[in-house]
Length: 359
Image (cartoon, rainbow, N blue to C red; front, side):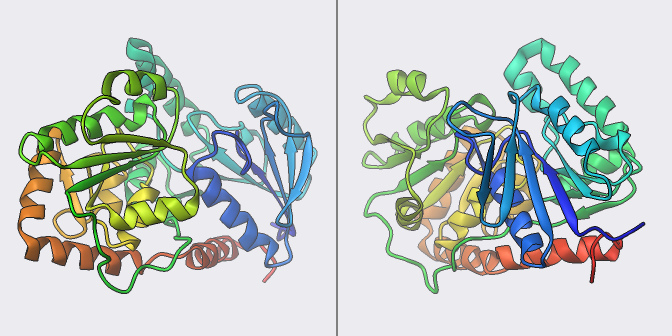
């Protein structure tokens, strides 16, 4: 196979999409690693009303067409025109059907699985079956993912060539445990939607508040559940909704919080876990795929079966100042293993090992 000097990324969202998330940040870092090697990179995605059809950002050409569903068909048609280009097909519940093309690799952050059922109830099982059926069409292609959990899911479907390249980190970890809030403080950081289960964080907090009356919960993020959660819980003592926060405020609040609470139904990795760890803050999360990889259970945080157990574990650790200090230090050390530079280097090595790029 000829080595590629041009790479096309297919992702339903771009780095400026209003609902961009960790997957888009990860993808943009890979794109920058490619442009840093002199590779031409284009990124095809859906087009929200607020964005133009084409744009150049950080050396990457963005092309947008269709909505988040129709963009998969438009993307395949666009990719067919890119002869001798390497195609990176980012599969988020559905891919861009590039198993029909000769030069593609698959990028998967997570399989949706339980997320389908959370979003669509009994119909979710049908969508989960379709997702696995589509993924099986890619089995002969090399696949990249961000966590051992997702790598295992892909191998169960029949993938033989799967490489795990974890997320990076955009900030240097603190050198020592920072000063925390005077009262026990929890932070929830993420989209307010069913699959992230923000209500689980609130339930854990309400359990804690029975014992620690001056405890507080910071909810950092926005999403479709915003209005409902505010109606139900904004009057609860200690619960504060901040909405979307900028990078500086995000890391300042993570630094001052005692714990990050992440009760998601499933994660690809859990980027917010490492961000919190870098600020000397342990993470307490659901014992689910993805979080089993980013949280080192008992060392940098705790994996729990439900919100009640999350609350019990946070109280136990917080009351044992020595154990809490050890967990904070272990969190900082764990975060020091991650950087976007390393992620980019591992990605280039992955491509070069398969002779996809000029060396």
